[in-house]
Image (cartoon, rainbow, N blue to C red; front, side):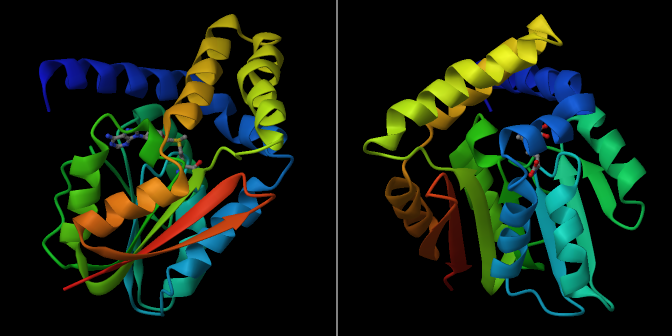
Length: 232
Ligand SMILES: C[S@@+](CC[C@H](N)C(=O)[O-])C[C@H]1O[C@@H](n2cnc3c(N)ncnc32)[C@H](O)[C@@H]1O
C-alpha cells in the first residue's frame, strides 16, 4: 500500500473505533431490523458444511461470523478478521467461541487454498485497496470454495432519489441528535455506497480475478449478494 493509502486506512480504522459502541444499534434501526436476515442469507450462500473452515473478513462486531458458526459445527472453525480494535473488543465480548484476529484483509496470513469459504459483509466498500483484498480472498480459498460478498446496492430508477435522501440526509441527521462527530461518519458511509460499483460491475471485477459469479438481490434490491466460486 502507498503512504496515502495507509493514511486513508488509518482514518477508516479510527472512524470504526469511534462508532463501534453504537454500530449494531444504528444498523438495526437504519435497516429497519433487516440486517440480521441479510447476514443470515449471506451465511447460507456459502454452502458451508460441518467440519469446514470459514473466514469472515471486515468482521466488525462479529455478526456475520455468528451466523456461520451453526453451519460448520461440529468440528469446523470460524475466524473473524478486522483492523479496528474497538469493533473487535465488542465481537470478542459477544462471541467468545469465535476466534477474532486483528489484521488487514489486504494482507492475510492464511496459507494458500486453506479455507472453504470467505464472507465479507458491508466491508468491501470500506477498503482502500479492494483489488488487493479480493486477490487475497481468492488466494486463501480452496479451488471450488466460495466467496460471499454482502453489500448495499444503490437502486437505479425511481427509488434512487428517495434512497439517496435517506442515506445521505436522514441517517446523518438522526445520528447528529446524539453525536455530531458520528454524523460525519455516517455521511462518509453514505458516500461509500454511492461510490461503490453497481452489482454487474463488481461481478465483472470478481470474474477477472478468477471467480465464477452469481448475483442475488434482497429487500427491494438495496442489498446485493455476490457469490463467487474460485476457479482453478
Ligand atoms: C461497515 S463495517 C462491517 C462490519 C460487519 N461485517 C457487519 O456485517 O456489520 C466495516 C468493517 O470493515 C473494517 N475494515 C475496513 N478496512 C479494513 C481492512 N483493510 N482490514 C480489516 N478490516 C477493515 C472496519 O474496521 C469495520 O469494522
